[in-house]
Image (cartoon, rainbow, N blue to C red; front, side, top):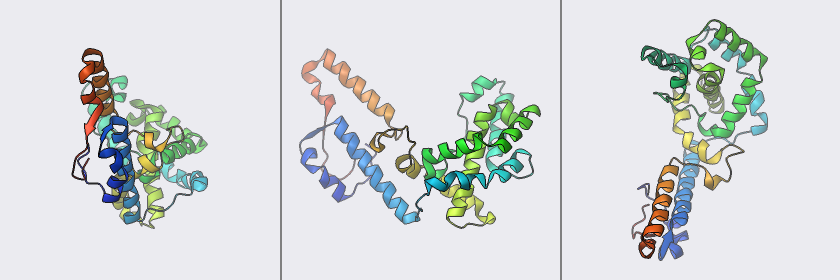
Amino acid sequence: MCKEEVSKQLYESYLPDLEKKYKIDLRRKFHKSHKLAKVHKKVSELDIPEIDWDNLEDRCKEHFPYLSDIMARKAESHYRDLSEKFYTKKRNDHKGRTEALFDDGDWEKTYPGYYGPRGSEIIGDAISNSKLINTALKKLSAKKDITTLRGGAGAYIQRILIPEVGTRLIMEDFRMTDDEIDKARELMQNTIDIGLLLNHGEEDGDLMGVDDGMEWWWKEREAQRLQEEETEPSQSQTSIYIEASDDEKL
């Protein structure tokens, strides 16, 4: 499925079923187990620290003065620069605010790395509840700053402030200096997969049900299976079952 090698131990744990023919849902579970094994190995290799979730909101608040400086343009911001380039391009393309909001553009992924959706939610809530930040956002809107005028306060928080805080949290975790901020951004981008699988949001359901970007694939296969069952019942098994391969690749 993803054409990546899996460990012999993981493959053999599914072997009794794989030696037969197995259903789509089992293949999906196998794929998820493989992904989890990969990210756990990555956590160990990168020495990703355990997150103190109870203390995360207070850690975020320590960076609010820095966020205020970003909004007042007293401090540089990598993600603000990306935002300005994106919205300026959309304005030059004569796209309205609604069109721009639904156009993903060339954004970098803005999840805060291994902090994942859960961390993003905590950071976002802390920012949204801050009087300091809300006051600064209102000033930006009053000045008709392109980053708020075109995207709104919500987009500004999601696209600029959350990843900026995420970068600073990672710098703290790995005791990086300001000169290593690019390294922190790179690590944040490189660990998004860890965050998505291990630190999903509280409302995202069971870990094995987290969308890994292949949801479209499963929906297409299910639609195909249902169509074949309706039109050619005798041949529907070809879409329900998949032969297990002799090698150790999905």
